[in-house]
Image (cartoon, rainbow, N blue to C red; front, side, top):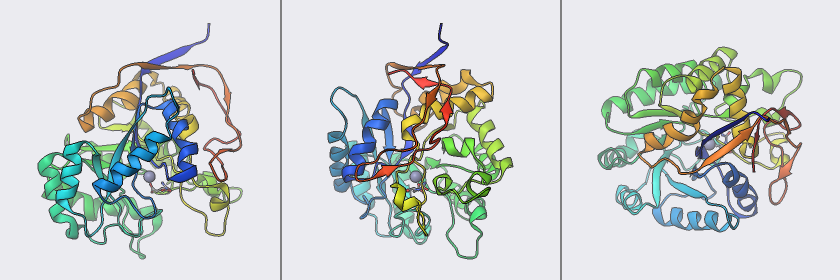
Length: 345
Ligand code: NCD
Ligand code: ZN
């Protein structure tokens, strides 16, 4: 008999769908794996208001194949000029689930992001007051800070003072990549959670740079040294309920990554659960996978757990070298590798 694992239907608490033909190609791949996903607003131009989020949500829903149940959870992109009242109204209406802080210039399409957190003090106060979660891309952007140190410096300079000033604000420290981030979350109270991507559990920075430069292993925050990967694996598979699944699936077409200035982002949507489960199996923690994938996230956000289940079977699956990305192909995470679990259809 095939070994199998059945868990409550999981969610993805951070991903990128893009728009247009790319969105229509990638949404079904996530809807196959997850019941809900927190959708990042870094389109060009960005999704900065409740009205833009409502329209984007409808375009995503239109891309969900017939017969599949999938709920996009929308975020608003914070800028120096964000309107607290509009965000609060969007949150009250259920159009917005959270707001997203991109430090200006930190990553793909973040040029309209916040230039100084002091400029959104009023917005953050309002969010704390109404219980609206803040998703954070946790990297400073100063030219004098080494890219491998940007997350750790962000904790000291931005996150620690923010949490001190607004202890009631719910903060999701997204796609964490360092031991320092794990220490910060472990040392924080119930209002601080973090998502962890599959790639940061699987690879360290060598995967990007040894034996040739590998653009499909490049994302932001960039993969760090091995000690950090090990800290993340311990956090994800450990007892804390404040770590949860967020793939940061970030589709870029092959030519945009294989370029003299390749885009940051790893597309991991098609085999996300298979990828995470491999880590939990290697860590001897299959029994903790359901909490990470299906329970900790909704509990942190204050949303109901999903009904229904998904089953993964211990059957090897070959990840294709490329997948459909709409206008052009995309090279997925684990391209041309074999994974040992398969999501049963
Ligand atoms: C993301 C993207 O491409 O939109 N890229 C990435 O490397 N993760 C942006 C982000 O989440 O930083
Ligand atoms: Zn992201």
